[in-house]
Length: 274
Image (cartoon, rainbow, N blue to C red; front, top):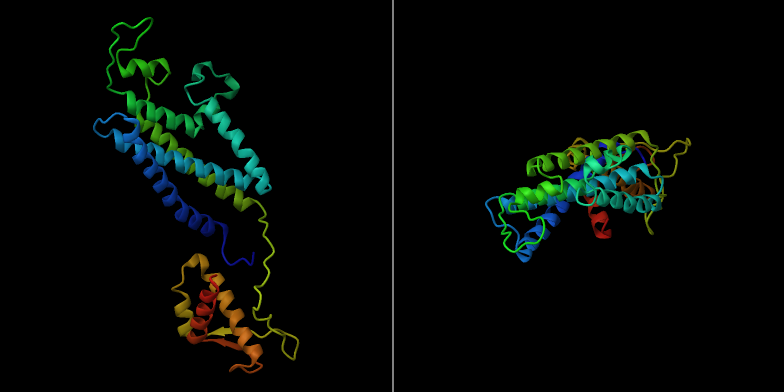
């Protein structure tokens, strides 16, 4: 809200922090599910299965970010997400074949991460399998490829489905960033914590005292991650103003931030758990 960082660093830091967690959760879930269900143990099948689930988790998170950026409120975003999922489930490739989809809705399967995930998992599981049709009544598939043909996945590959999901993830991230840049961000009102130093009082001339940093303090500040550096600077200067108001080592002139003050401000924030 104070302009301490732009949209791009914030969004990048959010993605970098959340994407590994999402990928790890998807991978752990897949690793636990695979042997329990007794899926195909062919060479490379397990790795491709986990990769497909990881991409599906990232795509789901990216869609959530995009809807959150477009929606005017949090409640609206939460209400929009389920209908999107229902559409993607309906057009996942198993329920309605792509050639049977109405022309006006044929774009939905192409942007459905559930469709691409289902397609990748089906191809990964059925490719190379052979079935016995002995005693079967009616049509019977003797190979996994024939079974895939029946659900319009005959020409599909795991690689193609993975690339499609990766494109969706990248496209949704870019779209979210563009929407955030174009929109006017709204912020919650931030109230100072109980017992925090009061704002700096203006000087006798009526103008607030300026804050200067020593070279050592500035160098220490540069070691703080860039996406929270502005926040750290603001909190440290507020702390220094509080010391000046209490008369602890400062006159009525400009305020000087030293390495000692920077360290003390950091320790005070750590003690508060902020």
